[in-house]
Length: 442
Image 1 (tube, one colour):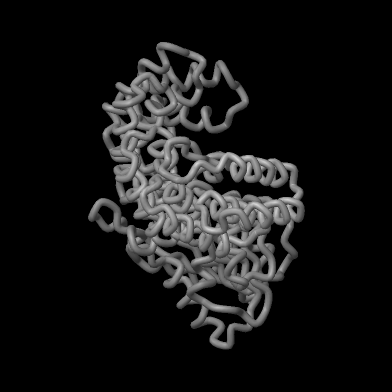
Image 2 (image 1 turned 30 degrees about the vertical axis):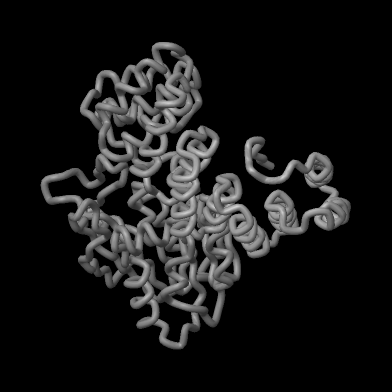
């Protein structure tokens, strides 16, 4: 729990001692004892913002996020010019997905204490959760003036610059960190990706080689080494997907649906509703993410199973209450474990855009579908003059339509139709793709 030593609040040493005792009880997991001790402390100063901050912490300890946020709002009202409750409110709002208000509260905290490094570093996390690297960078630049030698902050600034497409500047920030500590894997890995984005392929390859010398079994480093060599790895390591989507989870729906105009799940849901207007079906939602497909489709009269590698995505999907089962695993393990001839529909919305090669899963998709069942999935389009499988600079895969058709036909699927669509809108440009539908003969 954070306290401010220089606030204008009354000198209440006895109260602080009581609150420290509560803090210790919470840390020990003795919630009933903490509640009793806090009630005793609150009788001394019921509206003191520090008491309200501790009540918020207790509410979170008892899995009551609404109560925690309510106490934090009261703490802000009790001490509107104290940055601590405002910062804590911003962080709590971000933890529970209320990102718009969280960013506003974080900005207010910075306005109250623009020279407070603790505030600046903590609210940067709010901006990152909200997928706003420009705002995170602005706050980190303020911190850099006060704390220029902080290597972790410099690393964070470099990461933001890379996210914003300023890869050359990112390389320039990473380089002194790598020079100071050649075994700093995080800085070297950050530089490798920024260098690759900036066209500095030789530097990227050298960094990947060095990373693999430090950690030879690291599949993510091996993936990027192949990319730096100009190769197209057939798939991404699971660890890459987990890292990416765990970081996206809180802001995923707003980012994709509003920011990138992502409509694939709703389009796939329309297909499914057309095939099963009574919603009587067993559905396997591969790469279910936060559950956007089920949000569009609604509850089914049958079994709905969601699968995703990202634990945080699965946590978001659980809140919908629309899945009978949610599994935190990869595509191939999930399909290998599924019952034969069990599902009427298997859907994969933007899964192969990250998973790459479709061929390894087709046999298990076929086995798992009922006769007459359908496989529906989306792909980003590769142009006629490109390879069958292309890894874009965005680290997303594109698939040539002819190769997808051939793979489905060779597996035995019939009635193959590819519906052209816009996968997303990125930097103002529509990304072309298609929704593929294939049927297992009855």
